[in-house]
Length: 308
View 1 (tube, rainbow, N blue to C red):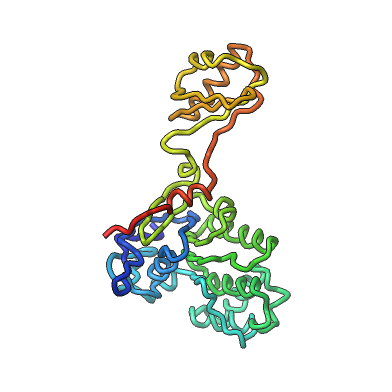
View 2 (cartoon, helix red, strand yellow; view 1 turned 180 degrees about the horizontal axis):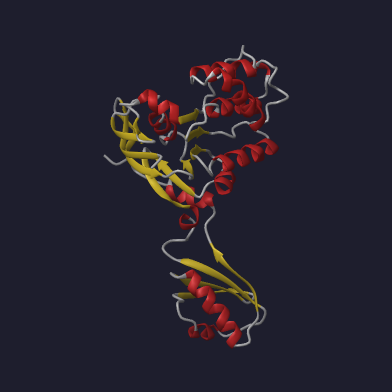
């Protein structure tokens, strides 16, 4: 397991910022870490990376405990915090040279690795400039380059597309998606389109508690059931649906459109198609109804109390 968090807790005075949370992330998974402002996302990420000691609980990355094996841990993690750690008076290539030295990359490999990162993050035209003169989007790219320069097994990215224009977002999204095929990526973002495009799983935290953790498609199901939206080319009597097994409830939406509630969407989809064929009924569309990620987020983070 690349990341294993068990009962991780952080208390500031009387405030419990992170409340005994637990989750595991295997290698090759890109996980979206979501939550409202102040929910505990950045605090959790800082504890996983060893930048902040937990009050209680454990975090283990690639087999190394964040408190007991801090130096070994940092070899395995690439971290881009919300506040990008850059030296504005340094040139891009100079800064990456410094970062590579901190990670003790051998001199003969260092130049090659720096050039790889510059090319990978689209910094070729800006590499000769001082970081302070770059736009926010390009500064973010420099931050990504420093996070990946030592070829870590795990990437922790806090708002990695912040400040990027639409074209840059697509480029960074593709970069993270490709990285996620071989590495573990935990990323925080408020942009649901980015989560939908990159992540197969999301963890939602609110008031320091994990309130959702599942595959996106599972979280988008409405309640414990799935609904199929069926549009027919001709009108029918509702009683005709009684011939189909697996329907729990039928709603007439008007204009020959119907909503079918079920606990077995795949089986029902096949049954509806066979039913239409047997009864000479033409289906113009058949699709699952799911919640948007925005709806999932709002539902999961609404009126959640902090557990003691």
